Length: 324
Image (cartoon, rainbow, N blue to C red; front, side):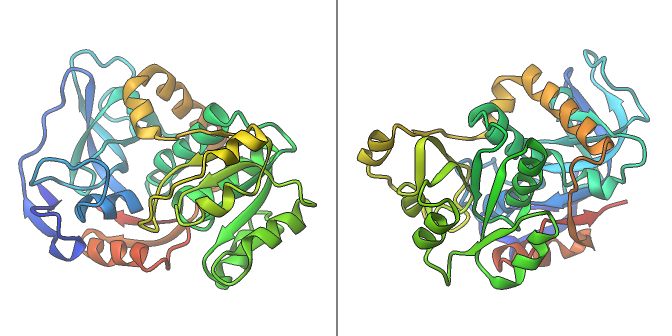
């Protein structure tokens, strides 16, 4: 089968489309005919050797796909050949076929396209795990979301609105503000050109934010000084390349918590809980209560260009690779 192959941790420019063997599903896995795969910043970091884990070389990148079940492992009862599904795995998505755990797969609601489905469970799963499971966000609380126009950030904006949270969106360029207002966000801060402390204090009447949802890393030290009493500061990722440090007297003074969020590791450790979350997201998608955004759809051989666009911060939502 055709697949994108990463043979060295040297970045997207060295990815190649090759013929590789079709993977065999284990007893708890399904084999999917991949129709669409999304491109995430995590994929970009993985092929560049900058993620916190490194798959054995060579490997097929791609974490999230949608397609049709080709076959199932002997212990799989939730799916059968012919089912339309979305799923995720650490690797393997940029290929004509991919394997995934049945607990990391979900049947698609009627009418949801493969392209849309390929953008949901990684993004919205991370956002849901962060806001609902880890922060236990409550209606009326204020959340500040960095990287708010990106994949996970935009999912958090969309989901936070559904949960009744007040959203303050952080972006790195002014052109993303109007886009976010289309998601109902009235308060947008460009943290590259505006004083983050002054704007947060102004918007919250000097109270600070209840939840700090940070995908960037470079703003955490400022956010640590802008939390409300009893708040929750959530490190989600470090797309800026900066892993920050926080003076520990700050959470002490305001009794707020720093709560780590690694949704992928959680889903590995608690597959039943992750499967229930996936079903919840599928229902929200079916009811049109969440609105995934596709920036553009590209053929598989444009994978390097897709990852470069992510690195250049020119993507709103997700890029999708159309494979079938």
